Structures are given as C-alpha cells and as structure tokens.
Image (tube, rainbow, N blue to C red; front, side, top):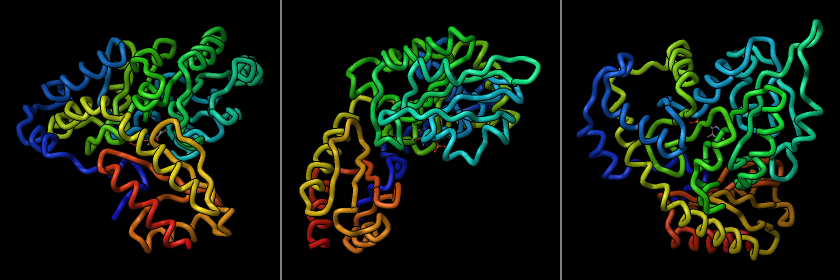
Amino acid sequence: MIDLRSDTVTTPSDEMRRAARDAEVGDDVYGEDPSVNELERRAAEIVGTEAALYVPTGTMGNQIVARVHAERGQEVLVERESHIYKWELGGLSQHAQLQVRTLDGGDRGVPTPAQIRAEHVEEDLHRPGTGLLTLENTHNAKGGVAIAPERIDAAAEAARDLDVPVHLDGARLFNAATHHDVPAERFVESVDSVMFCLSKGLGAPVGSMLAGDEKFIERARRTRKLLGGGMRQAGLIAAPGVAALANRDRLSADHENARELAAGLDAVPGLAASEPETNIVLVDTSGAGLSAEEFLDAAERRDVLGTAFGEHTVRFCTHLDVAREDVEAAVRRIRDELR
Ligand SMILES: *Cc1c(COP(=O)(O)O)cnc(C)c1O
C-alpha cells in the first residue's frame, strides 16, 4: 500500500521507539518530566520564543490559543478555508465562545492588510470587538502553499496596529521554512503565538507544540489543564518528539517527491496537477470524467491512497514513509488503471 492520504500516517522510526523506551520521565503536571521539559526548551529555541508547551494535538493547541488570546463574545478573523475554522468542529465557538468572521485569503490563503482593516470590528456598546487574527502556513486547503514571511509580517502588522493579537497555525511551519529557505523563527517574529505539529512531516507518533512568550505559555498551560490536556509521564511520547525535530532537515526530500508526483500525474491524460511548493499535491480529476471519490476508488484498486478534497479535487501528501520509488510506482499504477 502506498499511503498518500496524509503526512500524519507515518509510523515512529526505530530511533523514536528507542527514545520512548529510554525516556527519563516524571509527572509533567508538576513540571517534573525531564523529557517534556527538554522538548519544550528545544521547541522554543527553534522558533525563537521565550517558552513552549507540549500539547497532545494541533487542534488542542489552536483551541487553547483562542481561549488565551480572546475574550468570550469577541470576533476572531480567520481565513475561510483555514483548518481552525473548517476542521475543528467549530471549537472557536464551543470552547472560546467566539464569533467567527471569515476572510477570503485568495489562492494563497492569506488575508491582506486592507482586508484585515476592513473586517476589524471596533468594540462599542453594540459590537463585540475583534479579539484575534489567525493565519495558516503552509496553507493546507490551498495545496500546501508556503506563504512568504513578508506577507505574514504585513498581516500581523495590520492586526497589531489595531491591538489585535495574531496566532500562526504552523502545523507545517517547517515545510514553509524549507520552501523559502529561511529559519522557522523568521515566520514567528511578528506573531504572538505559533502552533506546529510534531506528528506530521516530522514523523513523531503524538503531539504538537505551542510557542510564545512566557506569560502566554503560562496561561496556555492552565488552559491545557482545563481542557483535560494535563498529562503525567508524558516523556514517553515527548522523547520521540525531540528526535522528530531532527527531521526538519529532510523535508526537502518530501517536497521533491511531491514535485515528481505532481509532474507524473499531470502527464496522465485527464488529470491536472500544478507544481506544488511543499509536500501537498492537489489533483483535478474532472478532465478524466471522474469525481474525486471515483478516482480514489480507481487508485485504491492499485493500492494507492489519497483524500478527497472537493468534488473533483484529490489531495496526495508525501512524507517520511514515502520513497521516490513509491512515488514513481503510484504514478505508474494510476496511469495504468485510468487507461
Ligand atoms: C493537522 C492540522 C491541524 C491539527 O493538528 P492535529 O494534530 O491533527 O489536531 C491544525 N492545523 C492545520 C493546518 C493542520 O494541517
């Protein structure tokens, strides 16, 4: 099976399993798990913030952020295809009790300063005020596009001028950094908090990180506890996370594989795939007269898996457990099956 559904399907390497087995642990709710503490220290160092917090999932990380930054009843500005809005069960309204205002970030999924100023709501007797802006990089729904640091800066500056805090959903932050060939911290300079996933392209079995200044992380730690995310001997899952951080350097291999996959599929009659920037490939199946589901059924008959991302759009994701030969085989098998 060539599993290209998501970069979350990677299984932990031998090195990660060893790290889990040998991890020094303690009770992390007491702040006494050395492996968690090491992971949090390393993560903060890598993204250039004062502190970081280990969270079980990226979704919990994003939801914690909304509670910490914004007050009940305020509005949050989100891109209309963003994960925090679309794929987290409406958690912004359920957990933080925020009202969502969506912005169309265009083909790169990032709102302009003018849009942010236009949609910002000033608090008064009738209006709740804007309490948060969220950005996403890379942008999943837009095909893993890597937004340039200058565009993050511009959006964040517009928000800051309005006294609105900014959160960056950087589930795939290091893919963006790899594409632009800049250190990840460059994307974090102008925002108040960032979340990134260890369990995606970096290959850890569990977990994501939240990072920001000490005051933010202190409040985030309390909110994590509130949501039931205070974990005990979590070093067992945090230690593989430390090992995963070393995989930042190999993401370019996933990006090359994605380009190869896109070029191969684009050459198949009836399929269209534009050149990806990172590890996500979107394929338009309409030219083949197939819906995304029909196309995926055909691919699965040849042991290739992807995800439907729209009526005629399929997403394939390259990752740690996909080699160049797998990509070539996937293209060959899909070409043969559609013939
Ligand atoms: C995967 C993802 C998340 C959530 O991470 P989980 O660990 O699956 O909860 C958040 N934002 C984006 C952009 C993602 O791709």
